[in-house]
Length: 264
Image (cartoon, rainbow, N blue to C red; front, side, top):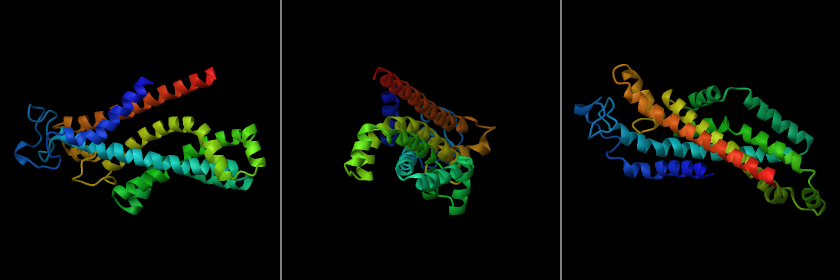
């Protein structure tokens, strides 16, 4: 579990403290120093407009990680509500909710997000909406599956017989049982959200320039990929590192929860 907390603290630090650690203004243009390699003044070099890459990476963490957090939390809320509704609402509601879920799952997430963002237009709002709409279904499936297994538990049956409302049962009995599994799913979806934000940014549908974001940094650097490949390597490595760290933390958390269940 220590690794989980270490990754969490690292990501929070990047999001909150990254801009404070940046040595330069990420949007400051210096054409006289454009496309320079790593040096004492610019540790990771500069881009085509002479902007410091390290400063842009640190500032970009707030956008890439912050938006990924918002998107994954919104998906968690929507998916959990849909899954609990399907589990508690009866056969007709369950069938309807799961058919909608299956319909969304039938389309590749990234392609669907690109289509939605393309229709709505490039921008941060469109990015958040597109990735949220295409990312809630896994939460719904997990919540529904666990919710159905809880319906026959004694304490749930007794609560229903006592006349407790469905909302109260969901809050006091379903959510405590759902949260551990949903948190594990959330770590994976958080990593997928980072990839989605970077992918849409690279395609031009995400956060718009000159705001620094890792995907848009890859987009800006693609023209100079042959002459100065480090421009693409740095933001690419940052995305890979964050996604890998989150996935490994999620695996550790899943194993820890499974071990606790065995002990119980």
